[in-house]
Length: 367
Image 1 (tube, rainbow, N blue to C red):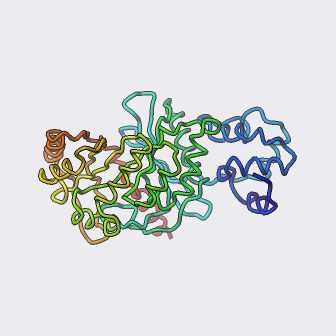
Image 2 (image 1 turned 135 degrees about the vertical axis):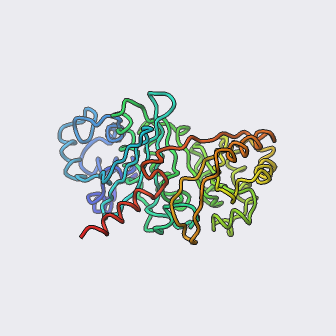
Image 3 (image 1 turned 120 degrees about the vertical axis):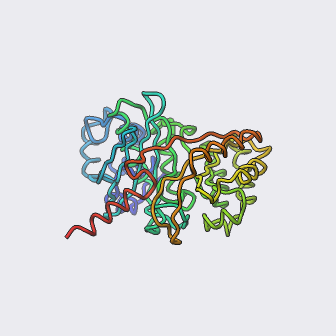
């Protein structure tokens, strides 16, 4: 990438995490440095343990000084931190414009591993009726740097707890497919073997079913995993819960997922949140099995984490443990690969958007 004067004008106000490898290399050349240092700078920036110097690993002293002068601020800072009894840690990060976004670190069954959940937008426009994030509406897309910053915070949070961050999923606030340009830019920085070296297969991108986004992700050919938030096997129930179902019906969405799976070779995860009396009947379990028959996908069941009154004035409740187990058994009886995801952090506003909503309420209440 050739250096462009306009690049200098915009990068001086941007955090270092927001620059692609090409942009950072162009900046280095414009300052008289060898752009071969670029991967080393990014590796240091994304390291699990903060390097002693701002830029990282064995860089020329003059380059260290120039980096600190040109990119003095981070894309996000820690505003609030909650730790659950089960070890789940929820971070609320404050962005440069005062807005906040959530990230979650979840301990694995293995004592030395952890998984992370990352947001892609401030708020969400999808209007899913049982989701806390959507109650605050959509504010803006996150920059690639703000996404990378979440990864850094989670990686270092895991390291401080004696764990290694092994996987991340874009399943926090927002719809990743509606900010895919910045999501993909962040993923490349995080996963590329020459840069963050986290690994493509360690990353999952989730969607409520944005068909063009799924196809665009397929075209990017990064080899990341895909997760589909389905939540109902039929269009009527799904559209009632997820308004996006009016635009993309179940069959159209699954056809896009089939295309992605055929291209990537990755098995898709079907996310299904069980809501008492809404989508948890045994007949719906059978319908779901019929829908997925012949498809190499697995169902990830989760029990709803109550978030209070919904956008449409409803109060949803989680399915009982007995009904959850019966739903799971019915799926398996009909040949569907399924498991129940363990609930995480019920004592710390674990559902997406809850901590942000609480912090905003506290700010409003403060004179």
